[in-house]
Image (cartoon, rainbow, N blue to C red):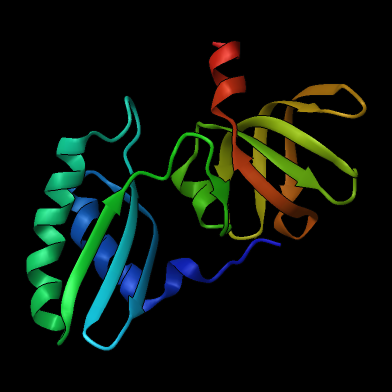
Length: 163
């Protein structure tokens, strides 16, 4: 099942506030601590042509100075893109990836539903140009409640074929 709380953590909100004015969206952030080191892993997204190494460097250069002072241990910072076939872990990610092609497993249909993310709100996902794989049902738009989704994944290969 997908989580629905990752986008409300204090660390997520802090880092998101730093990079959103730069034109980037935070997808995921995690922190792990060992005796002498803290590791921050940050996944960022930028629409259009995607995120470049220069973009990742710019994000790193904004985040590292701030958190190297705030964290009392040595800081290891990893900044990367979510990847073109990302497994979606949190319902908040659907908003980040609006306009992208996604594949979700619908519990009630016992099938994958494919389509473009047209809209994502607090309780459901709206897919346009959808296809229910098992029944071959096609349509302009379908709304799927988050409670009905057991797993989801960006589907770059299908998106590329359809363009």
